Image 1 (cartoon, rainbow, N blue to C red):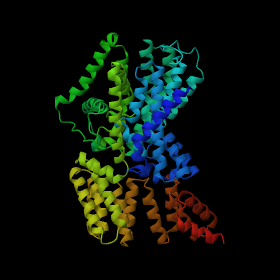
Image 2: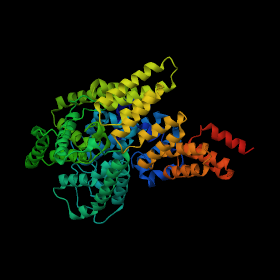
Image 3: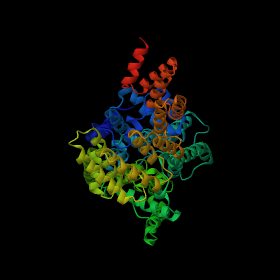
Image 4: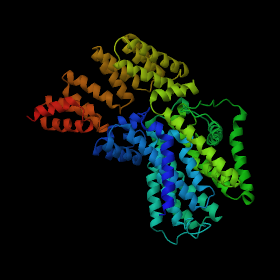
Length: 605
């Protein structure tokens, strides 16, 4: 490749690192623990196998993304810096690929579009939040797949022709088609929103060629089918495993259309830097029956119709850019339930992929300005984006900063209040006695705020029960858990915490009953099986304990405490060889499990 390319690529990397340097040294945030820091599937070869074959082994079934985390765990373990650096570098690669693809397509301002993508503040969530590795990684595969498919279809690089054109598609399926197909599969297994790639490919070909041959449509059919299958898988996992069901997701079709229309305009305004960035945006009211809410989807349709009617005068580019933007947003517009809809209908990370179409249009418009104004506008936009992105990235250094910033901008963000309460509660558990009361008061205040905002949600009552337990008021804690169970009878979690508290107080019969109730409601609750097994083992009911531990390991083979407790029980039963196997396995998952290491050392003497 020419030296110019490497200089431009280096420039994009420098831009990206400069924009996100404030976040690189930060810690894990919110659900980063489920994805990385406490995710035991990342620690063993068996865990890697489970990532691929068990959709419920990970928070979401994105096995390529989880495999990237697995590889990194072997390199730097639970140090968040490595994961953050990889996110930034992947983002820089995406910016480079966007510039290259737009150059190949002959889009004015192609390199400016890549630079704007690198530093636009709307991408902070996707880059500075480790959990959103699925965004930066899936887009990388998406763009590589698109490049391969464009080459298969005969789009020549800008360096070989002054004006790139789409030639007749390759007469036969060749290596570039299979490369594009393989990379597309990697993309959708990183995040299923990339299922839009074959539709995007058809739009690009129509823009460049004015038509799309049946040969290309038939060749892209497998990509459509793969995308649909994995999209449906994601929707199923969101409902059954992630928790995207219940009262918050009970929306009518008209509600969803209204939300989708408003979301499109929200994302458009975000790209113009006209909205204040926040981690959780206010959740719009739905089901109010007001007719004005349909202005948004109608305005979007009118705009698309206007671009269609003006395509001869303006060209097909603006229409294709708008359709790419809206089409790639579809999975996040509320038509399909995703867990974040519980607290907001929009989030910055939802438009990471879709933003490319609109950024390309903005860059094209700037490229058409008079030369004397162009440099000034470009410098001003890049400087403004860089400044706002750096400020936003700094907020993502740690949980406290993130949640406090969220509440400053959106005081009704109940999730932020809940997480601040959880932070205070965890801190209280390890704090000296003179600090505990203030921390517990802080936690209780936060959870009571959430309970007032979410009167139909059992979670804040469970959290208040944990505060009462730490305060030494077991009676109040049990009462709150009973209220939570009555509020949402389908939940097993209130019974799990009730059982733990009862067992801690020595009331084993009632604890056993509560654990059994929890397992009736949530049969895959591994900690409940392990804890109930421990009670049975202490009571001499070793066969029942072993059965519970083994069933827990069938659900989660990487459960450290199921392994350790099973090994202890087998050792008591005289089954030393099998006990050693489980001790060793537990140590592979958690090398710091000192009791297991001590038992093994004693057995090997």
